[in-house]
Amino acid sequence: MTKEFDVEVPVLIVGGGGAGLTASILLSRLGVESLLVTRYPSTTRLPRGHILNQRSMEIFADMGVASDIRAQGTPPQNMKGLGMYSGLAGGGPKDGHGRRIGLIEAWGGGYDDPDYVAASPEAATNLALLRIEPIFKEKAEQYPQATVRFNHELVDLDQDADGVTATILNRETGETYTVRASYLLGADAGRTVGQLAGVKLSGAHKIRKLIGLYLSMDLSPYLAEADDAVMSWIFNPEFPQHLDWGGALVPQGPAWGRNSREWVLHVSGEGMDASQPEKMLQWGREALGIPDVDIEILGVQEWWMESTLADDFRAGRVFMLGDAAHKVSPTGGLGLNAAIQDAYNLCWKLAAVLDGRAGGALLDTYTAERRPVNQANIDASTQAAHSHAGMNEAMGVSPDKSVEENWAALRLFWEDGPGAEERRHEFSQWMSKRTLEYHQINTDFGYTYDSAAIVGDGTPAPVPLDAIRLYQPSTRPGHPLPHAWVERAGERQALRELIHGGHFALIAGEDGHDWVEAATKIAEQRELPLRATRVGLGKVDFVDVRLAWTKQREISATGAVLVRPDGHIAFRSTASVDDPVAVLSAALDQILHTAVAE
Image 1 (cartoon, helix red, strand yellow):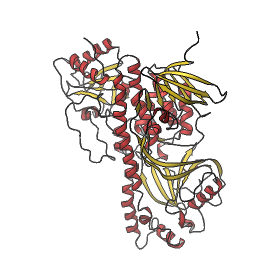
Image 2 (spheres, helix red, strand yellow):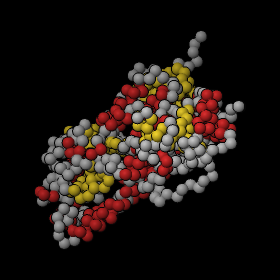
Image 3 (cartoon, rainbow, N blue to C red):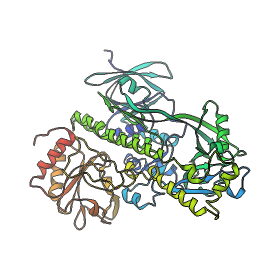
Image 4 (tube, rainbow, N blue to C red):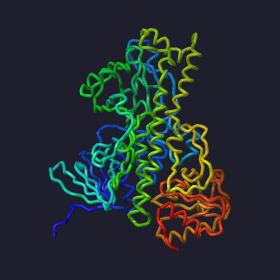
């Protein structure tokens, strides 16, 4: 008998970038078989997307790739912040070349900022997809549950009440084959899946064109003050016409700081054309002030800043992740991180539904939870982009001034003279607005969920002092689990490690024995991956060594919180209850959208 389908698999993933490979790894770790196809013959050859925030690094720790990322990523001492500098070389005053105009701490200042240290066991880091994707691909291919096929392209899909039928083209042989899957994940940046599934993205398209030049060059003689900068903006008075944008330099390693040998140079302006790389390189040389540096062009990428959001992240049995669901301007580095976090939200839900531990309606909460977060990302990045306004005025430079006048303005940043103190303070005031881009800890990390998979406890949502820049830990349902170091038998671990591997975690106070017993009983009945434990001081399972959990838990010694496999609080009881089995069972029925008879 001829098979109706060439391949049958629970989940088909379309797209082999950050979102798709993350989903493949997560599903494998949850025991779910998947097939990943991508039209490209290899992982990306260009260094797109590079900032990895704390939430993403926590996910990578759960995936088992965090140490590999850190081994290749920017060391903390080389990513203290964003630096701004004068032109690197040219005909101006020699002692002014490559001088620092200002530095603003970014993404935790190399994990020195107390707010970032208290928020998470993981520091943010910097590594482009050029080097991330091979790490992910190798990891994904290690699992027997995963099949990964590059150079295989989705060309058609059709879905019904029971699943999705996809037609895949093997681009190497020209042959097509059919795949039958229960669910399809669109992680192809919106190239094919969204159109075939009828997903619409609303918002601002083609806001501004950017060119990214991927270059090999030695800038170590010119960036003596930039070793601690993860990004450098250069303003060269020799060519005033480029001062409106300057040149944005991002080191790519393998060494870091000024010793990096590979860089991405972002340029912008009228008349840019990626098909003329030498012209764009000349533009970059002028913006930076490096006319004589030996440069090899490794690649050129042209792209548009966009702020778009899908009306729904789900179309039947098709789910959109990453750029297929939302596109955000690069300010703040939110795009890649959001893609990774989309996958983390969705994959545990898919596993629970496929295993029969949850009702299908649980998958509706993916849009309900992730769409508002990504709307907030778009809003935050838009505000951050607006914070660039007034940059030239704050430095005292202008395309309308002469070269000599612009150099004189910049010299006030490193030489004393009339008006120097006032100029530096005005610039500090302007730089404070850039915290909207580089201190987005609440946008990056503190986002909350509000859906049917969260059991509210009737408490009012806290009003943040600053919705973008200040993260305030809480155990209110929907919030991320607050970070705390805990200890057992002399071994220290982060509290959030209790959820690793797709587990729920019931965390009770010192006297919460009844909660632990109830959770253990329910987990056995439902065959639910759930770890139940008491955390605090004294005779407990995990000792709260720094009292960080005690300070943030917002429950009594007899209370408990239930944490979902994606690290968000799903249920909270501040104290004991008469029937913890009934209460916890009802909570799980709501979270998982299923009813289990006692």
